[in-house]
Image 1 (cartoon, helix red, strand yellow):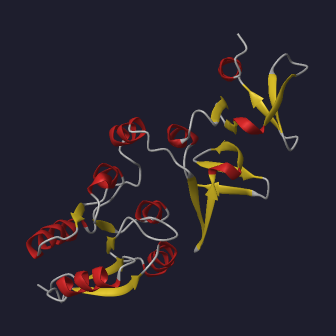
Image 2 (tube, helix red, strand yellow; image 1 turned 30 degrees about the vertical axis):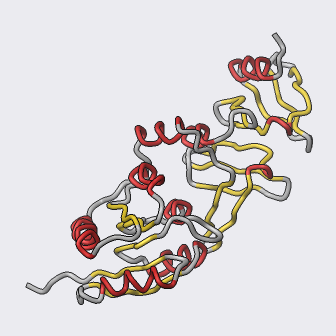
Length: 252
């Protein structure tokens, strides 16, 4: 029986690190390297266009880090993280990487990871973070300072300081800045724990506002509340959201 072939993408900002992975893969004629990339933007474009089976992915890179790259890929290749830092191990498995190689790694360790990854090819893989790992990550205080959004092969990096509010739209969120709105496939409930609670507050089941954009609260004719933001936008406020706002604002 003919052995299955695999395509692979190598992503690392260090040329020597990419060369080492290529050297190890040279022993495997069943694996064809379709591209190598030196930064996160290149990686998203290449993976979206080439749809490799296997992804060898560094974590700390210019422009986008490895986690941001993986977040933007659908479907996600079977991924092996290769990094010089062990502190990212929990999050690597949260995003369902099959293995995590710590530089410098041995040939035996590489072969072990590769065998595992090849065995995972063809399996249905969830892109939903493990809730236990996600909770652990949130507990460790690893909050976002930016959000990345992909539209086709175009990637936009949105610093959280630019956000006015976030609105739930089914399985998407609308990330609203002064310039425009960006749609991202993510639920508002999965995004909320990653935001700094000192800067962002969920005021309604469908809305999170940046607190420094809040100008005032207004009562409506129906006796409900709306939050008026600096640009004049009016965001609905639920009863529980109103209570949280009063607490944050120090109003008894």
